Length: 451
Image (cartoon, rainbow, N blue to C red; front, side, top):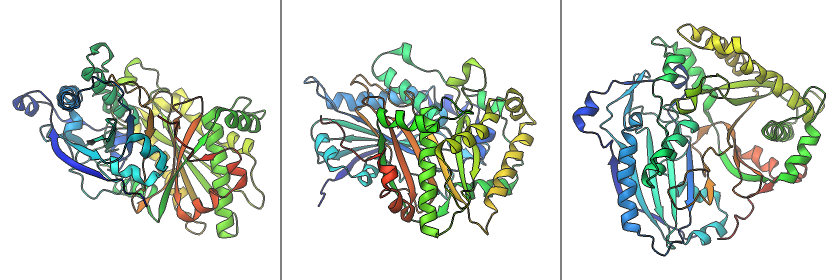
């Protein structure tokens, strides 16, 4: 029986350190088109920092964390505001939620529990719930203080404001200001995303309803952590090779490997094959050749979709990789990317939305949908407050009662492996986590290296 307790000991609203009168004179922050189409729901991530410095001063650290966060918000002030009319963010004086909590466990003892569900105790909000209110904080932090002196920083942010890249830049800048490293601060470009992808003032309600349908489906979801080590990934990449894709990437390979076994699990449950869709988050920052996009705020990604129909025979891994590669190639097309931009970009965007609508309207088949996204390549691993890089990154425990099948990839903190945080409907997960073909390459929630 696990008796770990996390007790909230303080709750505050942190605001930008600028004067109140200055905040009132700031122009509203415009959402971009992709922000408008993204629902208000809270992803999460937890950074675990063991503290071994004998001179570590906890009281001073807690004061400095809040002070430096307030200073960071003078640069990232949209995180302090509230969303209005699905068009802009204003009221920057409202502030973000900041919690402090005590944990009655040592961090090393917590790691031994291997209980993913407990992660939700370390974050302010339950992850990926369908939020009814729009006037909610854009981001919230929870500083968890372990009995040993270690710190776990839990973050919940509204996907309406931005993607993981946006939040990563905020966190790295906060860490830089806290640790006295001004040269590492990332100065955000707050106007670029809405300039490239202007918001639509008359957004068709059916498209908002469509995205709601795409993101949220009532069911009982469970989240599991699987780790693929470098050797397993290498073997799978060899299986995934083909004439059309001679060098599949690690993420392409793992995406299709998980998709293949998820399709098999669905087939076993239903007794017959069914159409299966992948919605793959595509990073637009790395594809649109503009130097400032790395610092741009907002949701600078969109979903690429690909379908597979296993018919009466299972599709091979290399075939799925070929399908995925072909479907996502459009996002490498310069003309397509240019068509998405500017005042008329919504026309190209709505063509994509119409494809989604067709995909989701297949009620007779009730197709499976699996979404994939990646937080790899030092996305969150580099957030260093002066205590060293995070020892481990946790994602989340149980999601809300309405969500979708989602897979999040992270780099392992040791070696060159990849963690896959897989959220599936419980019946699907029960089949997947007992699939010998899947477990031959994926290790279910292995021990985190001992502290």
